[in-house]
Image 1: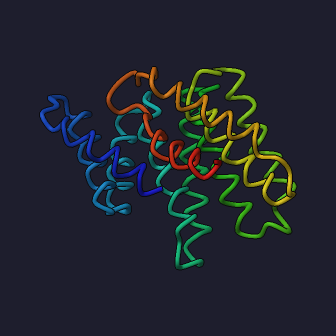
Image 2: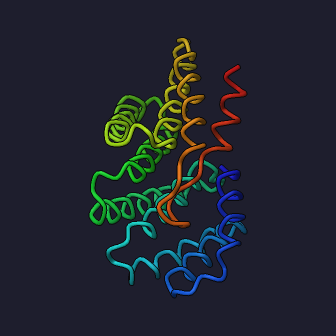
Length: 206
């Protein structure tokens, strides 16, 4: 997950000359996140979201950061609050931008974060919910590299658990890398993460 943060932070550092208040705020939040100041970054995104009420991106990053932090949380008592904050932010982003594959990927990741807290109890329900989000996102935009890669990565986890063939997922990851090569985010602040993780995952596939 840290490769996501580092690549985003390095990219955002080049945008410090942004002129609008929104761009300055987003650049600051990204920098804080890249420096490991997740709490401050989320607080900054929350302030932006309170002003930019028709922009889904601040809530997207609130959800994304909290979801990633669940996977790496050392203090398990903080996880319920992070899960709630992430879901609230996803809900807010979805109201602004319905049927958005990028938001669906984070929703699927959040379901996975819930699943891994107690796989025996949560596996069937939240595994199905995560796949539902990935399948919806893939129908909406089959050329989004994050959708294809994240779905394949999730499926590899299940395949390894059940001892089934991971070759189709590895092929999907390879395809996602091709899609990353041609993907251009709408703005510098739109999601662009995933290539490094996909490349690492493909190496593990071989």
